[in-house]
Image (cartoon, rainbow, N blue to C red):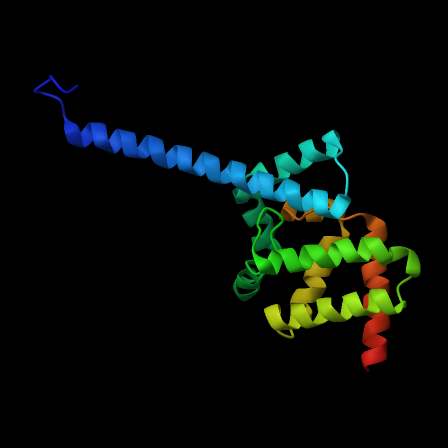
Length: 181
């Protein structure tokens, strides 16, 4: 290459740059997958290889299919709100805060939906949701209906939450709302 006087440096450098950019994207995807697995470990407090394999597939799934599903249920303004949802494959403070709520819900679920501990978590979730998304009941209702359905949650690319935790959230949220009004 160095001794070839006809070598096209522009093409060679562009090829090298393209290779590096592709490698960068691959490494970013690996980083996100690892962050997602670490966050899952925080929530599940154990490692199940079958479950881990499903999560890896979820984190590496094509966003194109998720976007088609999202476009079906949410109008343009709501899709902007979807971008504010916490991401399991991230270590940003916003996502970590939501993950901590899920960890705490699992920790105190045995105390029941109207226990002070669960109600405090729900209060924090409520405040965080209003702060992040505003008071948008239509958006929340659509999001919650999708979240409660394992099939739709998967199509949206949501982290799988056990049905008993979803039921706890719903019951505790209803209790919280009734107490607020």
